[in-house]
Image 1 (spheres, protein in one colour):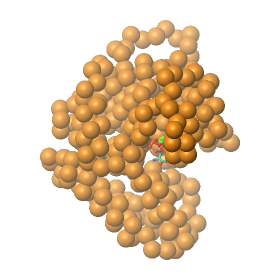
Image 2 (spheres, rainbow, N blue to C red; image 1 turned 30 degrees about the vertical axis):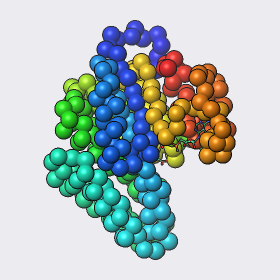
Image 3 (tube, helix red, strand yellow; image 1 turned 90 degrees about the vertical axis):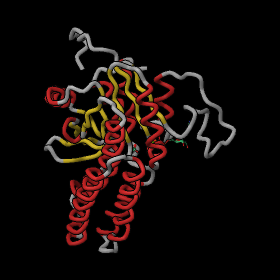
Length: 286
Ligand code: ADP
Ligand code: ASP
Ligand code: MG
């Protein structure tokens, strides 16, 4: 992110991020698609989390396989939930149903290997944990395209390169920007559906940004695409004066500084992932 480079004249771009509760079922996904299609920004990014509860389910599946326990029924339930969503959401669900089956087949192989090894490698675990975003983003994408949206599907594992450090996942901005140039050359669409949470590491292996990391994904991609705004949609009416699950009388805050948002996230308010603010501050992204 070299601020001495002259800015390219790109059409305005708005980035949106949707959390798991916003993508909990076909009805919620349809609502999200409506919001995205109603947004008239010339360029648009939509970064998606996994469907509500999916990442927890994937973590539990990996844990069960590692312990040599039963995992096939839970995987079937996960597959069925995504198949049901595809059927309820899409006019022509067949391709999506095949894709759900293929991805769940890949999961079954990873889980089978894990249950044999009993000590899965990090890559296997991260591939399992990140599958929810691959599924949810594909569903939203297929629906938006059916409704006539000019969207490309961006699997963040193709573009975003991170290195894991004691301070969390650190972005390799130069490599990621180069990967994005390649990706854009192949995808002329004005809008992109992007998988949150997942990335690749410096060895090219699939990884994740850590739990709750889709907010961070959204800020990173907003920066890479040189977006002008980032909107993080969730199940609350904004950032509140406290966690409403703990303090029911908490009220929405009209505005807050980057610094206040950093402090809030750093001290554990789940509403924003702590690393989200760094790319936003670097770009002055509202
Ligand atoms: P998403 O799936 O959209 O990322 P999260 O569950 O990760 O949603 O984050 C939203 C939750 O963060 C809210 O439901 C709320 O319980 C919690 N939260 C914690 N602190 C705050 C705060 N200060 N303002 C709003 N929500 C907060
Ligand atoms: N789905 C991932 C998680 O549950 C990432 C996210 O939702 O931000 O941690
Ligand atoms: Mg979150």
